[in-house]
Image (tube, rainbow, N blue to C red; front, side):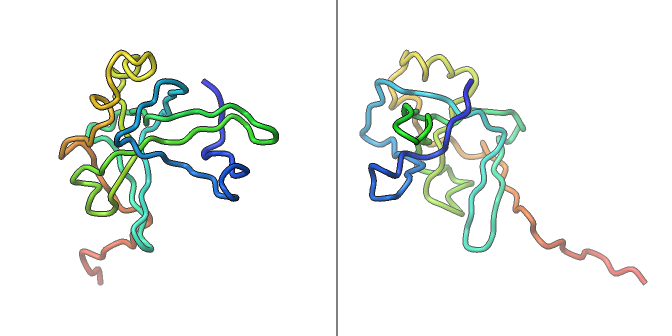
Length: 141
């Protein structure tokens, strides 16, 4: 496990650091990595949401690492897929979920990308709003 910067080296992309890479029609024969997570956040306008696996377990996001270049450290980007039904209400894509049982399949390329980088089924995630204003349900006198 190492610490790495999130995003590609902006020196090679007109000053923009790309943090994500789409999975569709792509092969990732090398530089695969995993990003351990217990949740990820999504933003929809001024609202922010926390997305967790329904059972509360941790998971991994499929990633690709890039070696250090010049002043830019080792870095990574998250591989994305079309959002599943719970997340689709807020945004079109999210990181590809790699379950603990799939770790070596992703890292060792034991299974084709198309079999791992898929939109998760419905009812996999719990989505809750972060910093939502409390709703008053009763009035105390």
